[in-house]
Length: 264
Image 1: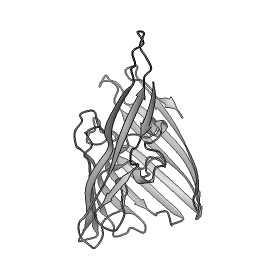
Image 2 (image 1 turned 180 degrees about the vertical axis):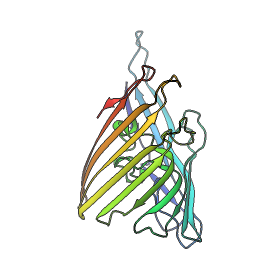
Image 3 (image 1 turned 45 degrees about the horizontal axis):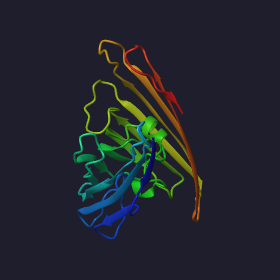
């Protein structure tokens, strides 16, 4: 089945003040108090399904919201920022309901060396996964990122520092590994990390990893191991951008009750 995916208006951003943020960023608030942010992405889908055996056309079409998000962010006393975002599009999860995307607080006193975030946020793994929606060059993220880099959002604690203007930026997370809004089903946590080095203003080179465990279908069996590794490079000069990313995934199973993942 071929799918033609068209964004009618592209990515339409609605901002409630002059500064620009987008869902998924790790930026905190400002001294101006509470900031309300949001954006929408209306979408038209056309599915080329061909014909059945009787020659009847099976094509389908519909209008949806690929993303429709709103949230608040800001700062409070004692060097604490907060960030809260929800997805209001009914087409973004299996239950067709509004759901929580990001909700975390960040301690910024020593942000030059490490900002400490606690809550639910994007997993610090993969270049494309950590690119905000407004910064993507395609409507959706690639299949390899969706299949091997996830869960895209998770609950845990993370330390990170640096930005696109510094020589080094890093993120190190200790997270459930079960995904957003899901209680972990075992005592073990996933360890994730991402490091990006910018030797020149136009060049970023980095890598990331994820190590974790997950339960087999039979809870009496030994926990299975999960390994994910990624390398990335990005060249940006004026209006020219060239970037690439490779992700490798491997599951080591100690039982036959789960299906392993191998791929890159």
